[in-house]
Image (cartoon, rainbow, N blue to C red):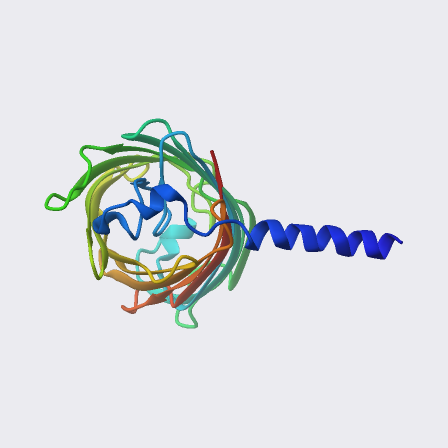
Length: 284
């Protein structure tokens, strides 16, 4: 009896997820240049947009592997500023929350727990331990995002964002951030018949090192290939660390979609591989 009841509940859940209408009337009436992304404003999550009154909740997992991560013993509090290449591996569980305050203003919050392992270079004879393992709180950050105008057939949409990272980690630690970090970015979005392009760039300021400079820059592409699937691709960099990031988004219904992608290092200083998977929940 319990088995039959469990099966009935499972079938009901599957029915609710997969048999909801795939496209709302509002989506049907969208102009072609909004066909890939809808009317929402861009968020910091790849290929993800939020509309007024929506709450986005995105629990996700990310893995990192780099066989030749660049470091200095000084990074771990051991004096030398000579550069070496070590090995880095980590697993991180994160939660992202976004809220569309209005058609022009959005707020974001993100935090995570990470377990990381570092092995120093065989050429490094400093007092840095041969292996370092850490587990705990990773970056805790938020963003304020502002849309300046609404895209139309001729004019792209322009936006700005301000990001802050809280000092939650110890100085010279493998994980977390030990000082306030700030980022101010700008970007533009334009939709075409063949896809939607986004261009963005930011400047960073680290209060610990008291250093400011050009931060992340990216070129993004998004294409809705069907009512169920969207394809995303991006080239993103910071200084001489550049990565290619493809992603597939599978819409189970209008309120839930599955995101699966990975970063692949294009330059030697970028992380070798960084796959990410999670479910995006949209609450109205």
